[in-house]
Length: 288
Image (cartoon, rainbow, N blue to C red; front, top):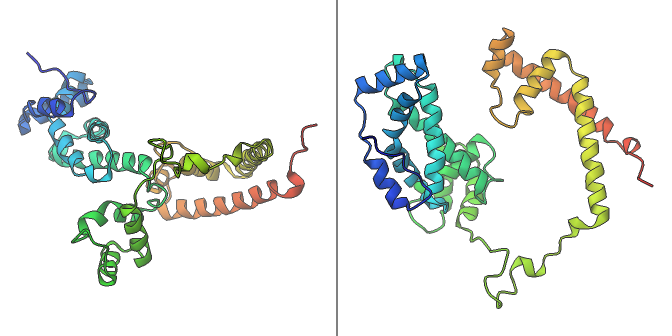
């Protein structure tokens, strides 16, 4: 009798025990299931591939517990990455699914941490993300980094020393609860921060600014040729799964560098168009 699919909604220990009960597949079994899924869209075959690798997700997620996020949530996001890996896995390449899936599992967990952790604003570039996920393991002690250690980490990760210092400061900072936990915590932000942005004048100003931005973007896009507009929309205006330079290069039959040049030129043209659209004379008349 097949074991039921474990869920992370209950006890995390029970989930881990259930995940570990699923046996690992042999290379032949893995190839067979993968072929059935790719050629016949056999969802039971895909299920078998996912279930046999749940323990891998648990092991990888455990390595990210230092960021203060629930283990169950990390596992859940890792499972999303595992399912994406199964969907894209090609058994004819001679690579085991475990090696292929590690990238997808880590990618989903990284994105989850960056979306939900308090440092999301500082880890915006590829180099900063690398620093974010490696600084903890590169520190030899809990004490602050010395100047020499800062330089060593910066050199290893190819970032500026001041970025290392800033990231370390934020990593070691303590979160302050917005709401007071008891009556004595009158210093909590909720006790003294006023919401000035909710004033009618501020709301009207924000609405007008948003209207200008939307109108400016539409005007800027209308000023582009079809190819430039397609590149900008694919690279910048998708909520998820933005196209890469190489994907667009294949679509238009040009080099990735040519796509980058077209993108840069289109963005500059749009900036100028948006600047004109947001100039003072372009402001909408106030509502009577």
